[in-house]
Image 1 (tube, rainbow, N blue to C red):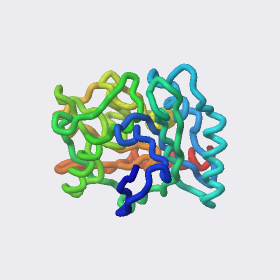
Image 2 (cartoon, rainbow, N blue to C red):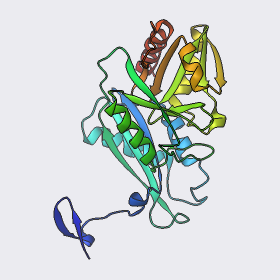
Image 3 (cartoon, rainbow, N blue to C red):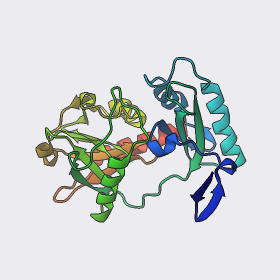
Length: 264
């Protein structure tokens, strides 16, 4: 069978394509490495492998993933960066699964803080599972991210039909108010971010209280500080039109997080 690929007609037998990629069937994790050291590997891989869609009997080994992650870093002569690990069925969902690993550069953010916009999930439907995993079905996320870029913003933050803040297209959002770090409730079906959980623990060292809450869109302007958090960017202060902050506690958290990953 002939197929069209990258402006070329190819024989399909000469190129291996897992068609589940076209259907958005699968999951992924993005893991950071600093000075060739992979960070928080167990937390990321356990989240990906401990999901209800993966058959009880499969050939995926956590030790093999770690070995191949280190091999990719070595073969590409990398020092710092990201590894995207994609897990998907070889053929049928109920059959065996396989994974791919490919490296990515760390994002560069020159600004001290980045702009966000708020978007309704009604217009950008997101696929969510409970508990939440990183699915390959990211169409709604990417449409929202494109809308943000059109508005010269770094990240869209979604809110649901009840006007509760949920999460960004690619990152979690946290707020600080009256010395309390507030994160959107997991009851809303959002991703329980690995980096977010690390930052929540670090916040205790700054004598911040921790609270998971359903945050109304109408309440965001009453917050003292806000920041985005993810594996790729770490902690980044954020603002929106007609709201700003001095980010005093956020910047302390950012510095504490950066020190933590250097010493991990």
